[in-house]
Length: 341
Image (tube, rainbow, N blue to C red):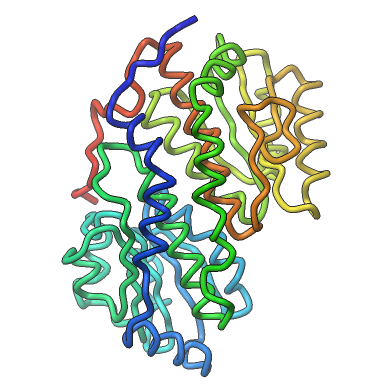
């Protein structure tokens, strides 16, 4: 069986529960954030634009579902700046997520050219251009991160749950109380999970990860991090989108992970897995009802589920990198902060 090449990325993966715990302990509602929330609940904003790049953008999907009745849309920061700038005016609340707070698109977003009614920044970097320019800032406490977004991703998800609570007037953060312990329960068995995944994924050349609703965050992020951590083709998409074309690729060298999701959509996702298997792919359900331990997640509040859903994809990245004989998450062409548009 191939061995996992251990590196900084693995260390970051195992420190994710601590990153979420530290973020939950440190997040506080200051006067600036309270003021934005009060204006939001008073109807001061006609729309909410949620923006970022990469996994930061994907992390916004659960919040978009919570705020859909307030005109929330998710759009990547580059497209927002160059093609959809008219969305931003004094009646727009912008929520921008960036772990560095200084990626090229975020720097352009906050350069003063576009003037929203309010800008809430979610970042892991105090003093960054985003933190400095924002009307209010939620600062995550994930610590330094070597390469692939993992600690910063789950910490950002946690901060966005808190932001949703604040904007909607819900009890603050109660849904996340059990999340760090549940994440640790799964990650404590990381070696067993990776060994099982190595056995399940020999010969895999293409990977699809799919979900519905809030699980789209993990699906999109998984597609991204699998590419950048293993250099293997991977795509994240909605479960319905997988049926609209990609299903034709089903074959023995294709792996498909489908998130179980909420009870209302779980039967649809289970049926998709069954159809993919019948078509010849290696397909598995990810969630509390998963048949394999590497894909089985502890039961938590639905608001906390996105923090756990990314974990099996991260373990998969270690397994696929082991098959390739490379160190997962070691960049060759990319950089931690994307400084060029």
